[in-house]
Amino acid sequence: MTIPVITVDGPTASGKGTVASRLAQALGYHYLDSGALYRLVALDGLEQGVDPDDGAALAQLAAQLRPRFADGHVSLRGRDVTDMIRTEDVSRTASRIAVHAPVRSALLELQKAFREAPGLVADGRDMGTVVFPDAALKVFLTASVEARAERRHKQLIEKGFTASMPALLQDLRARDERDSQRATAPLKPAEDAYLLDSSTLSIDEVVQQILHWHASGTT
Ligand code: C5P
Image (cartoon, rainbow, N blue to C red; front, side, top):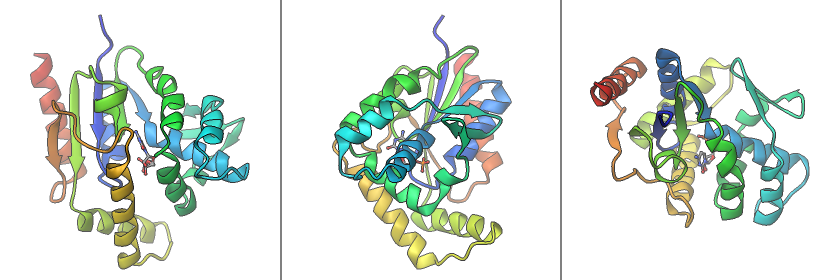
């Protein structure tokens, strides 16, 4: 029996992280936040002074990455870095280092190892196209750039940060451009993915829709 995988891919701030972890919870599946791995490599690189354009050196860091995920926290070499990998600096660097093919291949086995019984929900950019091409259900979650910027704005304000909409829009557009234009594993829906535009849907509605697709595929 192959272990079932549900992939949720999509652009930055499409809500895929929240959706994927709720799905995993609802189904009792494991959860892989693949973006966190790119963020961990970015953080490691920044702290060790590695040039974000040096794909070979970053791939070495990626190959030695032994992250520990537990109870919604992630640690690296015994240090809790859950909040550190969410800073704007790390976010921007993650999107830059993710263009390097050697970094991506160094993270491939690590990602595949998350496939454990009874099942896995994996979110990212290339889960359905590259990492789990045989996934039982593939979802490509989108939302307009304006809707995503508004969500990000709300989140930042709630956390007590200041945020400017024009800057957020510009940053999201730059990340979309880098993610979809890169040569290796660009952001694009798998041919057999269900497309879901969440611009006007709540998280709950998105989760229910995916659970419905999942149930129709397994019955
Ligand atoms: O999803 P998240 O925003 O945490 O991902 C951080 C960065 O890692 C993204 O901007 C993207 O460039 C990269 N990424 C990727 N492939 C994945 C997951 C994330 O290239 N599967």
